[in-house]
Length: 406
Image (cartoon, rainbow, N blue to C red; front, side):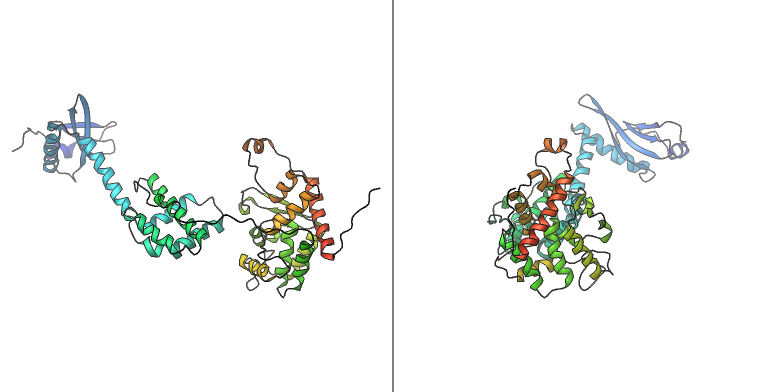
């Protein structure tokens, strides 16, 4: 038995026409059907609770027939009699369903979303490294699991398998933690099981790259030519020293970036670590090395192409392996150490910090200083790069001339 005398008939509802503004037909007990300007018709329930007027949508007509709408109306009226809000209950149910649906998403699927939405501003090499770690170590263990079901113990098991390489193990922990932080912001999960694992990996102190001093620079330069390697590898190793750029900034360089007649190399912002374009002023020696390099690699758009495929640039491991097998008296010397070598050499010979920092394309740590410092110091940078090349040339020849005072 219904407790409300309902009045609407199907024929009246069907004949109701749309108007410029929405209007309602009353069925009884707060149950109405709203006719929208679009012509659609929706059942709603209006009621008072705790002195406030509320409204909750039941559903569209004719998907909800008159009888179905009235049955649902009776259920909602009973909730109001018990002091419960149908509108708030519906909202809570929506949130619960969304949360449950989101929590059912697998870790791998959600990690892909995290990569797309948060790592787009990072360099390609950084993103590729993150993807490799996830593919190799994380997805095989928990990629298929719902993200809301993953425990700290499962993440710890992944980390413990990589403890032989503690830096990698800790980076994996940080990556998983970042993915869960993103999931919390998206209301997919309420807690981060990776946070409890902070400190679970003993990461050794970070070592600075070894740099060369004095006669070591000459020994290094002479050792390059003694190696049995492709001309592109030899020339690229020397250019790293004379340009002071990062390894991948050179390896990914295209020939169109260079103006050898003007002795400048403009690296676009998207290939720079700090995402700002950088101009390298080329010494006479650097220009000559580049002319040789372009001669050997004429079939490639890249300045330093792969030895086996001219359509792609040289892989970074090629230079890494080349440096590892060089024996000139300094063990564990890496390509990145050339930046520190060049910077130290220039500072020791009177070039200021501002000039060297510009040559290295470093960002100013002090934001207020960075905001007001627009100096490019072009003449000083040109002089510094030519001094560097001349100095290396003299050290490589084994003769360092000390000028006498006039």
